[in-house]
Image (cartoon, rainbow, N blue to C red; front, top):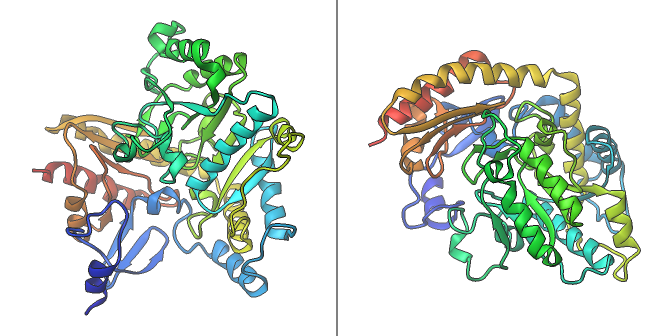
Length: 428
């Protein structure tokens, strides 16, 4: 039995039918923007391996930091113990995050970071005596992870987890902000969509612990870019009703949208923020949930007194050392110029797709390029074409998109945009 035959028979890949898994590529090496297949052919990783490898694969500074840490201490529990990599990473995060978000809880994946944030919000409300505030508000089209509570705040109908809607907690879903990123803003709440949030909070605030959403960019929920001013209006309404605001920046943090954090487009600071993916430059899994001193102190002074969460691999030293090295790259390289150059080139090279049959929209924000189709796109078609185009793309729903590493060259990015347009043309 070959390696791929064993894989097809015994391994279960994400969002894949085990009876018909579709084309599969055995990768033997990854470096820079390139993935090398078992037969020696190479593909550009236009996905940054699910949006995390922002500095490219096997970055020498990050791998060196991990190798040094591996020689000293791969892991130690964080309960009652601490270590330099966690402290050094904490210092960097406090420096990068807006003032006030300075209490950091580490975890081992983005989904878990969301779970931690939801627990923080509930325990905060309980500490204030608001014992009825156990539910959450969010906007349709969102995605916050695959763990149980995180699924409950994903889009209940068009998201990945509609299958489980009957088993999940009932949450409060608002219409998706109707004004897109590039459209003109209006302060009329009936036109900008804030009237729905205002009505919800006026009638249900005593049931809601927090509003959770992806700021500006909805990722796996449809790659929709909405107007930043919606965030400011939402924050003002939540503050007036004592509702916390949670930003899920797992996909957008560390420069992906052209700002260090997507919330910076709106100059809004949440009560809680979740980070992951690019945190380690895609070299190892790690996530963080950061909150304010007020939230942390309220929980500490409550009857429970402790946040009821403790992942085994919390603050893993190996991952923290990778994250420190990854964040250092953001300080020594002009990532903003890299992302802006990617955006400018994608806008120019993807624009012709607007004239192709079946295309509903083409949009670019930072290092995110999207061709939205009128019909669902079979990812197996893109997977089968990848060896021929030399570009690894993984469409979802109606979106053919890319999120390339920031270090991608102009020539390689042209190969990516060309492959995206070729895929549009090749769809039956």
